[in-house]
Length: 158
Image (tube, rainbow, N blue to C red):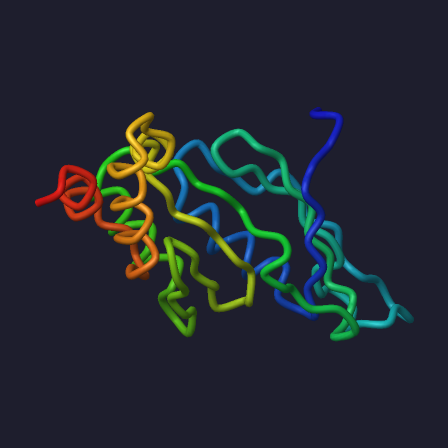
């Protein structure tokens, strides 16, 4: 068991969200589900908490009501090596009511924020040539889903 893990508060979609996320990421699984019993604040049998892993990282999810919701102040950063991986994750995470954001950010249908980012972006933005890194930055600022070829072309002045 890892010492620290993300804990996600849901209204009543913890199990649905966990199932959705494990269907998207490789090396992922539902570890356990605890259910509310009779006399609980939710119908008996409803998932109370869900432990799941995404690509080996353990998460906890809780169905605890609508008092708290997700904000962009917390997001999950996903390194996507190829454009194909970016496109696939973007499609799956925005499906069913998610929404694209700016600069590789999106919200999924549960309102959770994700950043789908190729490692090459960090390389381009930290290029020692300020003109090259500036062009990459300007290109990124104009994008929703990141486009590796367009970022590289912009950095190269094409």
